[in-house]
Image 1 (spheres, helix red, strand yellow):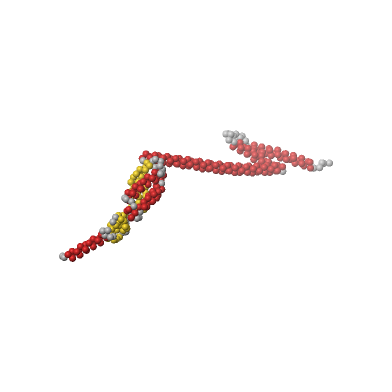
Image 2 (cartoon, helix red, strand yellow; image 1 turned 135 degrees about the vertical axis):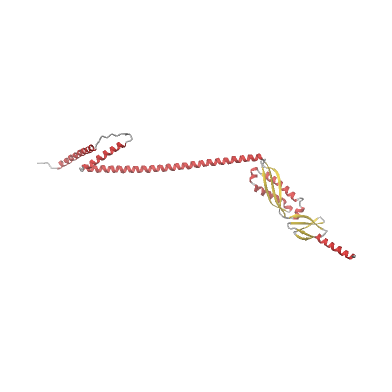
Length: 318
């Protein structure tokens, strides 16, 4: 092998080395920064790219996908001097590879410390009750502050979540007792309200029943008065009829009238609650005889009355 062949082989190997040194393949989801003599020149996107061999070099290899950063446990003192232990999680994504590579040293450590500091600031400005009940507000405030702080670094904070808030055990016991007392209070109030409502409904029902009872008594009184009025009217009519019959000389009418009242009197005596034993040594013939005697007296009275009327009406004899 002569010198020319060796030279050609060397040139070929050198060309291959130059091609491999200048060709760079960037995987999907990554960006590479290119430095020329230590100075940033440009950013390589995913795919095959070419650089100047032996002059340009790869500076930083940055992950452009969204990444998760765990925030470790730390103690936070709230506004009402309660000490709690909290931890969280941060989601961020590199938007500008050059800024993320050259604007901050130790990007993940910077984001972590910035998040932990703002967690203490935001949660320290709130009371314990607000801290435990307003996690969404805490997350939103943290996201606004951290996102504004990391923007010059070419990073976008997409989400910050508080994972655990652990108060001390004695504080948890106090909160449990407070919650139990509050629930007992609400239960007592609800029971009192139920009893009050039941008493109101019972009073309304009693009032309604009394109104209905009064209306019933009024209606019954009206009916009794009407019945008594009709009974009195019927008695008056019967008396008038009997009186008219007597005046016209009908003996049977007075017999009926006297016998009816006599029987009603005997019925009243028999129904009297004060009488335990009633002895009535009466016979039907005696009753009929008494009625007959009364009827005869009435008849004689009527005859005398008619005779006086007739004598006064006749002319004297001559």
